[in-house]
Image 1: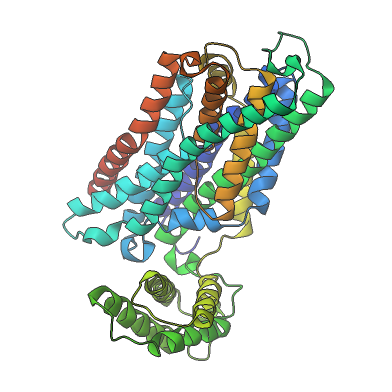
Image 2: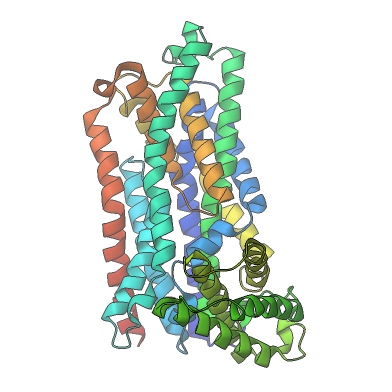
Length: 468
């Protein structure tokens, strides 16, 4: 298969299975975020709720595109980290997945709401940082710090935004809904009024759908990292994209860049400028009169990917520079051409999306009890009311939906748990929070990145040493 020796093929399969298992754990770890409110308020029976949530998670992954997935892939510049030894790629992926699975499973076991997004990103950064300790260290280029910074801001802001927005929504609830039943804690075994059940069912479904669109894409990103690092010749390029159409995009990028005023350029701008022209010429030379990537030698395909990645990223960095003076029309044209050129390298086969969808959907259908109880009873000193559950779900669905639209990975767990905290504070102030639970959640939030960075980096160095 793909000309791989037996040992490497077994490791490839192990990596793919591990990625599916990570997404499976992600499903039951994060299920509570969607189903906690409908189960805890007796709006749905647990079996119905988790199946309903699982189906919508599945649909979310299928329809979510790949913007978030590519954000995950781009945290580690694959064009730098992929080398001639495929076992190095295996070491990278296994370290990433094992560290993510260990932390996710551990926090789930103790019933602590923890972010799978934080876990995955910490593991990826650990791999990048570990490259500093290798003899052939690639230095700062081992981590895409620009992308890491954007991702870090998304993860930092999401719980703060969730907390604040939940307080505002609870305030609106109190102003607009005068029915006292909404503000009482659920009576065990007793169903709430039908309109409350419909509202909570809708918010549960919305969170599940957006969770699939955002968190499911992370699994797709992991699978693409596996395929590109172990089989770069077969998965570097999207075979459905016409190479000559990309030549047109690249030529327009080159024209705009080469005709700009460089008199105010500094060292960084000239570095990007020269890199764009270099990789543009390289791409055109290799493509020549070929139309499909299947016409390119397997050994040359990754180099084509590298050309596209380098010239598009260089162009994006120039666009951010105040010294890059072009007209507004040229700016729009350049952004459009970059987006079109990226289609050659930013993709995921349908079977990858379906495989991750099934893993996430199946995982969503089990393992929800531990975290549901924490969210429903242990965040506040009072049990969660119907209005609080709806407010937190609305906040979570809005936050995840916006993040997905901008291609940013965001923590479903942090959005919902911080939303619950906000509703508790809106009801009776900070004194209404359970100190022990909040400390555990905050500790998990603070420790996830450093623990996973150290764990994944250490495992990576160990696996690289064992595999040679």
